[in-house]
Length: 59
Image 1: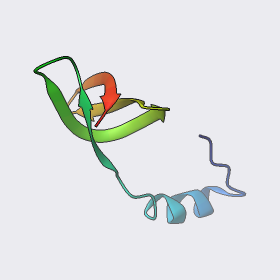
Image 2 (image 1 turned 180 degrees about the vertical axis):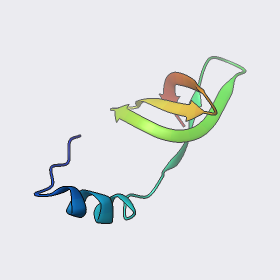
Image 3 (image 1 turned 30 degrees about the horizontal axis):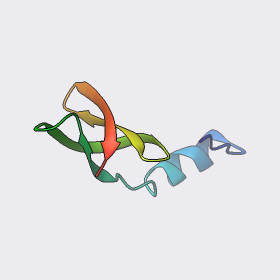
Image 4 (image 1 turned 90 degrees about the vertical axis):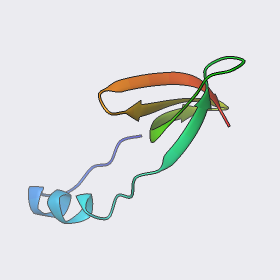
C-alpha cells in the first residue's frame, strides 16, 4: 500500500488519521503473537510486537 500527498503539510495532517490495527497471527501449533498489523496478503500477515516482527497465519 502506498499513499501519496500533494504536500508535506497534507501528509502530516493525514498521518494522524491513520489508525493502528491490532491482529493476531498463528506461529505454529501452540504459539501466537498479537501486535500491530504491518501487512497482510491473503491469510498470511505480519505483526509488530515491541521491536520484533512475526509472520504467520492471521487468526
